Amino acid sequence: MIIIPQSMAYASLANLDPVYGLYASFIPVAVAAFFGSSRYLATGPVAMVSLLTAVAVSSLTYGDQTMYISFAVMLALSVGIFQVALSLAKAGKFIDIVLKEHVILGFTSAAALIIASSQLSKVFGFDKVLLSDLLEISTFLEQTPINFYAVLMSLTALIVLYILKNKLTKYQFFGNIAVLTAVIVTIIISKFTSYQGPIVGTIPEGLPRFSFNGFDISPDLIFMFIIHTVIISFVGFMEAIAIARQLEQKEPIKNSKGIEMYKYPTPVNSNQELLGQGLGNIASSVSGSYPVSGSFSRSAVNESVGSYSPISSITTTIIVMITLLYATPLLFNLPEATLGIIVIFAVLPLIKIKKMRELLANNSEKGLVCWITFLSTLLFPILSIELFSGINTHIWTGIIFGFLMSLMIEKTKTSS
Image 1: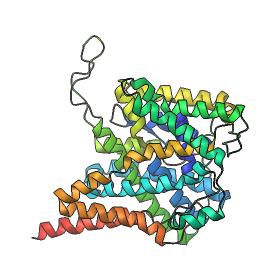
Image 2 (image 1 turned 30 degrees about the horizontal axis):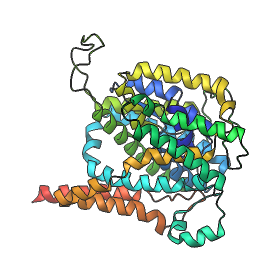
Image 3 (image 1 turned 120 degrees about the horizontal axis):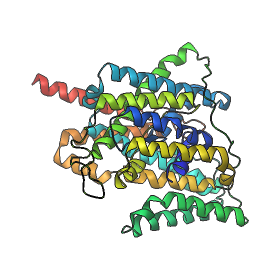
Image 4 (image 1 turned 180 degrees about the vertical axis):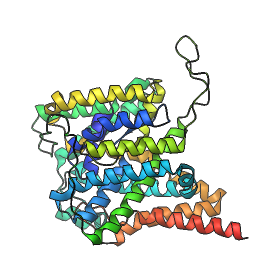
């Protein structure tokens, strides 16, 4: 119920047509679940990896839309191969050591702000919103007319999501169907009123073609392609393993009759999860889509209802298959404003300024690294040259700064 609207929203965040989000939610979901170690981790399109994909592909294609999907597919393949190679090399624990939790905290908080700002064009019905526009908001608003149809639709979707997720907390079912409900409500309003805001439009019917077409890449872009592959591989894996560990069962799971379903809980294994994520990304590439990772919201739903990943993944695959074969015309009138609100609502919990302040107060070294990672991730895209999508190629400099500072601090401690 969650993955279809979310995957479409995240595909648009990656500057891809919504159908590619559905492709990435088809076979990759099952492959990652069967080869990974987590019982509850749900793999598919996610906000952070979608943003990094937009950054990578935009920088490699220079805005050439004819090459965009080819590069996105190739990126998924390279990320998958790299993650599988890391798994075979037993590098899971090494990644845990290299990318510290406080580095990821600063990076994800800043990236979440960038993601939210990138969706303002959908919320207000603009053609696009560059990060620098937000620094001169009054001038920007004078030159760019607001689409009030899109604004009203955004408010409608926001109200539905807020009420179902935050006000009806006693009934978990309503929280689980909040995204789907917002989609259905706004589609109905869009279809049966004189709505004049941007809509998703025609989504191709049918399953993805399971093939891979190569492409030419100039030698001067190969290094950048490798850098983006490494960054997406590490960040995607860290997001997945963090979710898997958070939802790891410490007590034996029992069924409705109180009988233990497993005598011993299965611990999450970093290398096994790397393998699952890598094969999931390869499957996404073969499906003609872009890189994937673990989703917190969908994994949390799995855990809350006791649905194990292999079982839920089969169900998800069937639902997405039915949608691709028969239900895509129903999504024609889906407002783009709704997709923007879905993304914003999903990433807001990732902005953890309070936790960052507490970390700085309790541990000055980790807190300093966290804040430098946060500020460099947030400011580099604004200070550098922006691309057609409004997202800058230098967003990953923040996590590199954080990584290097962590290494310097660790080396200083070791030397002393």
